[in-house]
Image (cartoon, one colour):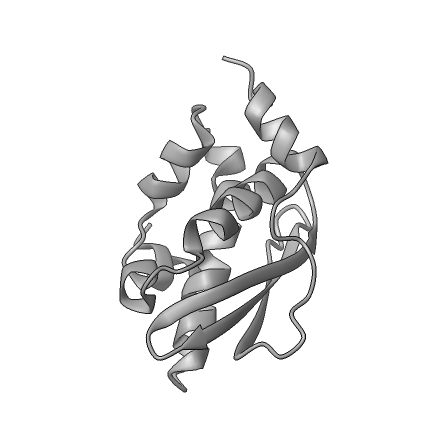
Length: 134
């Protein structure tokens, strides 16, 4: 199957949630040093509900599409449920096999989200292995 399936290219060319929030509750940036992809995620959280998600970033179609898809899924989700998301949830959203060379591209959005949620609770950021269990 083609790595850049039509739905991935659609999210890459027409990303959902890309932009900035006026008054985010938390902002967190992550970079994939192996390829140079970067993402900054902004969340507005009320109580334990993610009310709004916006993001900025540059990188390959896989990393940008994954963040676009994740941003759509996160709005109105409980922070506890967002923190419980797993790498396979991202792989299922992408709907294409992700090889070892593209794993960090695909999971950059999840890594950024998990560290943003840690920051929200005044906890230190974690490594890839700690946030993703891989």
